[in-house]
Image 1 (tube, rainbow, N blue to C red):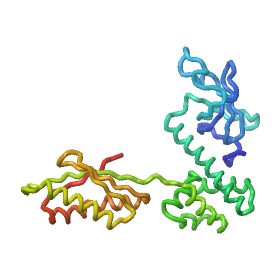
Image 2 (tube, rainbow, N blue to C red; image 1 turned 45 degrees about the vertical axis):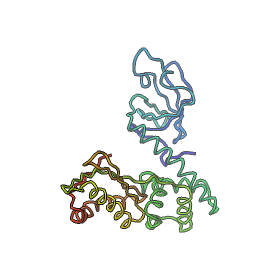
Image 3 (cartoon, rainbow, N blue to C red; image 1 turned 60 degrees about the horizontal axis):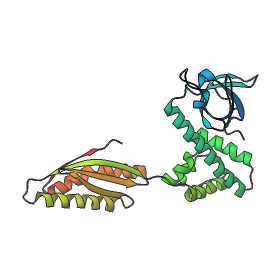
Image 4 (tube, one colour; image 1 turned 30 degrees about the vertical axis):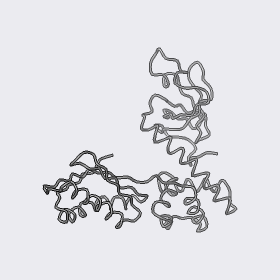
Length: 265
């Protein structure tokens, strides 16, 4: 089944291909998403004269290629392996996995509703047009709730099925924001004051944001690391932003001086 809406890829597009046969002048590649055969010339695979084509590809291998020419009338497509950048490869593999998984989830939903595999495929194309990556709809349902489906032109029963599947099947990794707190005190019992202030900071965050985890570790006085973790990215961001305000109150209470700086991931 063709995973993409169009019949042929565009020149410059990165595609998923399974190597079917290695010949003297190149490799024959099956383009999984298009159900087309393409050819990768040897010079578009090997990157140095002393290597063999089999040093780069083997029959049965699935990898990412870049389209270098397309002749729709002759149904001839040429692809390149060496022109694919690392970031393009990673992005394409992720999209391909998401397309395959989305289609499987939609087929489950359609089966429950008595609809066809073809309708599942058309729905996946529609979701990709709306979100860029069709799997995002399932992720967004888990992250922000079923309201993300409100404006989509989908059958209400299908929306219900998507929400149910998202909650059953999708596990979103938590969002984490970290920072470095610098805390000093000129009081005689300064170390105890800092310890108490940071403990109260963690407690205040978790009371204000019950679904957030806030943990503080000693890096080496006067530096302390704080990790804010939660499933809702916006809530995690809000909790981290709130640290400055909370510290201002704690500074007065415990007579400590503090600053916080976000660690760029």
